[in-house]
Length: 89
Image (cartoon, rainbow, N blue to C red; front, side, top):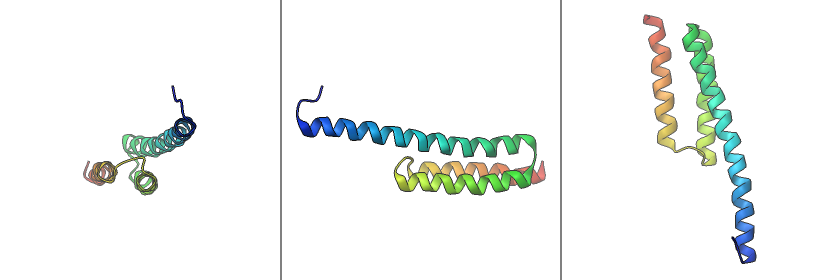
C-alpha cells in the first residue's frame, strides 16, 4: 500500500488512466468488429466505410498511447487486404 502522499496520488492517477485506456481500447475493438461483420456478411462497400472509420479510431488510439504504432498499422494492413480480397472472392 502507498505510504507517501505522492504515491497515493500516483495510484489515483493510474486508476483513472487505466479506466480511460480501457474504454478507448473497447471503442477500437467495436470499430474493428464492425469491419469483421461487414467482411463476414460479404458487403464490400460497408466493409470499406467501416475500415476507414476503424483506421481513424486506431490511429487516434495510437496518438493517445493505447496501442503501439506498429500494432495499429499491422491491424489496418491485414483488414485492408481482407477487404480488397472480397472483390475477387
